[in-house]
Length: 197
Length: 180
Image 1: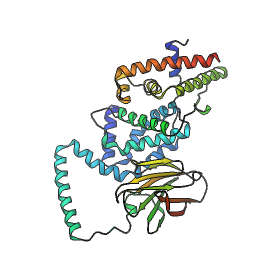
Image 2: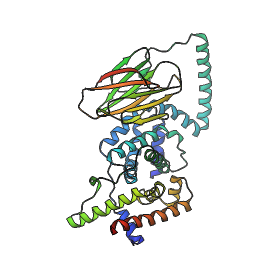
Image 3: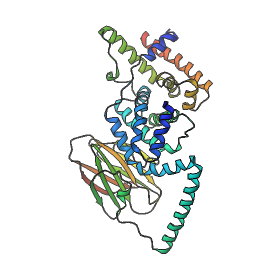
Image 4: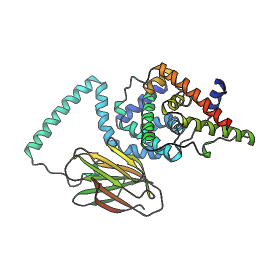
């Protein structure tokens, strides 16, 4: 029987697995894509720790809320024509495809692509973005709380009109285009061959 | 400035919108988190994807981190939860590939070392998840009993008893392997 010291020695002799070089760039690319959300949370988090700041923020939020309320009462509501870019990572846009049901915005940084779908219509809704698993691999979700991953698809439950389905994917092959499908409740509503070069 | 203070500063800067400050977190934790995931039994590709998922989730939830506590406890808890979810959701992980083994100058010694490491990884993966985690937090993340208890969200005495059982089971698995 192995004694305690020998077991400990063997455990401690296990080599440290080194993370692959591209891991960090993948994480930072994904982190960049959630920046909008994180910064908005940051305001709240800081407010918890500083009383004076919290009071100031409360007053500011209250004033802003009144202004927004007045605005919405005074003017008829209409959706902005191009809302997709506001949440997508601030990377160069590779492609933008739209129809009456959805808009797909594709941005790129190096070998990483952000796919963001703005779905029109009622909420809540289950939306999915799918791709060919030989061409792209998922590396992060920009709106990850109600999201589930597969190698070739990510699906989201969108609960309000401000939420969009977003995913960061990494290019796997030398294919020059990627077939991207957007579906709602398992029905395809948009399909595009997105250029990768 | 100690590591705790460095961590808190990075978190504050991230929350203030300085995304690049997250590099500081990665400098300190990318390696241990990746290693812990690998020791849980993930292969290289799964470990990379899962590790990325852990850090992105941590970043998304930075505002739920309580700065009066140690950051690494919070981060390791996120990592453990994600890893357990991945194990439950997908698959039984297989022992590591040969690429993870180390080499020694002496070929015979190297072969023996590699064999022992392979057996140990196989034995680890054979353990029930809660016992595997006890070994990982103590031996690979090198946490104290108190820290391990916080990360695993169980009392210290539970950590000690799981560790005792885990070591017992590891011995049995390794002995069985040798007998065959």
